[in-house]
Image 1 (cartoon, rainbow, N blue to C red):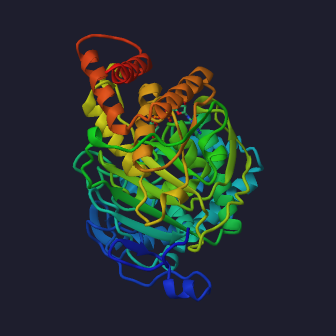
Image 2 (cartoon, protein in one colour; image 1 turned 180 degrees about the vertical axis):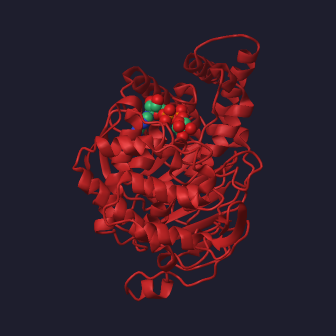
Image 3 (spheres, helix red, strand yellow; image 1 turned 30 degrees about the horizontal axis):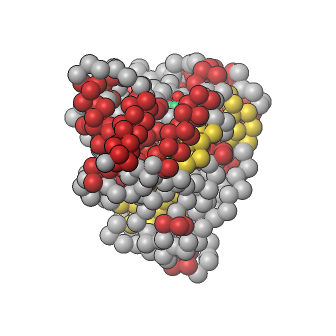
Length: 500
Ligand code: AR6
């Protein structure tokens, strides 16, 4: 499958110089203007980013001065020694975020440093290098970064170096207007990006997160990979009439061992997302999405510009590199070793790793999901993530690597979610590889159901009809196994057709 040439367009922003890229020269940032308004990321180095500095004159007279915030950031970060202590880092960050001086705690960072598995010197050196990288922002990102807003289809392509520099700024909490996500604040509809939350409230989870992210920063500050990454926000405009969908069921492979990120190599890999992408990666969360964002930290930069996903939106990320190996999950998550990502690159120098963030519905009470409003919402969401619009023949579509989407923290039913994903994939004409995460019974049930649906040549529309009936009965208080119901209904119709 060959890509169209990399270029700017009304729906694609490219933060590197495309002509230099095409001429195979060194990657250069694209020159452009700063925009200090609602459609773009407000950059820490913008000349519009100001803060009020108060100073005492005499005994009680306070002078207020409006000063450029970047000047203060640059001064503080450049003055850090090559090997600063965590106390130096804390002091610097609080200096240009004075409103949070008493609110932010850095105990997790202090503890991490104290218990640093490698030597403390290495940790300090990395802190120094991250500061150096953060200060290079005006040279590395020279044009405004658009926000990926709700209802808009837009993509941003940037270099791994640019991402590293933006993440170094996030680490040093330099992004203006991003320290509160309170209702009605400017960025209340965006995930947080400054790392302040990661640094407080020490726990083993925080320790492991810091270890994983320090490994990333150590790697990119030693030798930054030379490639690009694309973040594409997609909004599904098509109104799908699921009950009339004539597509038959796609191919499926189901297995109980393996993970999406490892065994799903080369496939479209599903991120079981939060509508604020990355979920709790900078806080306490440590399940599928957060782990993915930690081992492929370039994903974290999506939080800078991706507005909360709506019901018909998704975010596709192409080219995010994996840097870490891990074991465990949630409280047992542990960073284990560097990961050498040997994935090949495409014509845009992006690793051929495609991830799609789709957020399932969160059910307080699991019984809420058996209604067709929720089922249809999930079908549209999954389809938005799965469909291709690149003009390639479906034979060349990569399969979808997925699993129990929405069935952990979000309390969905894996049997229903498997059917929903199979239906959405079938409409998108893609196969599925489904990882049941060690659940052997589920593996067997999904495989048998898929075999049955295929043999009976059931269409997506027919299955939608059966789910509608099931939900009707459910709302009338009838409780029966979903899969038994599907078998009975479809067999019943088949028998009727045979005898009439
Ligand atoms: N590969 C395959 N399957 C997996 C993997 C993996 N690497 N990891 C987990 N599973 P969950 P959700 C299976 O709870 O319910 C986050 O905070 C495993 O069976 O992460 O959609 C997000 O930011 C697990 O129980 O997804 C959201 O806020 C199941 O997938 C929220 O959680 C669900 O994983 C999303 O919750």
